[in-house]
Length: 160
Image 1 (cartoon, rainbow, N blue to C red):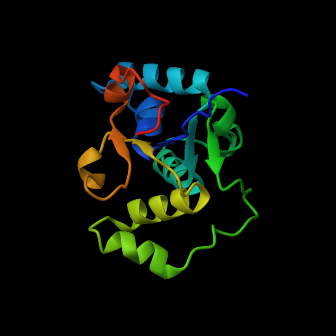
Image 2: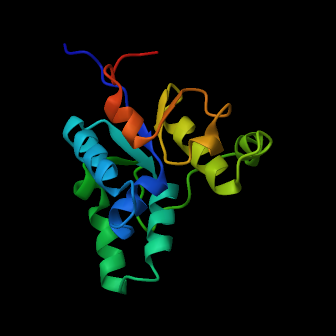
């Protein structure tokens, strides 16, 4: 039996930089991070993040391209989207209180919803990757890294 690997929550902005902002100063390291996490198979994001990505890119993609992005997102990045739902499913079941508790910690609705869904799916979640660390600092219960910081972290899969 091998050592268990830590799943890493990846925020929307990491995917958006890769897909839309190729001239962004973070694009190269962002792409390297996605390659590393894809090879490790330890990345995940929530269906809320995927909907955010699709919403942001909907202005520049055809309906066919948007549908393909939704359909092939997990394969493209070798990440898991949680919960595993299709377009005909209902939103993840949460109590309003679960989201509101995050909002009380000064998170936007979108970020609060993402964390509530992620932690409901993986209560032991300990690592999150985002370019917006300041939004989650002192709120997310685990380790926060930018993609660049994560790549420089020597022991990525060990518990805290």
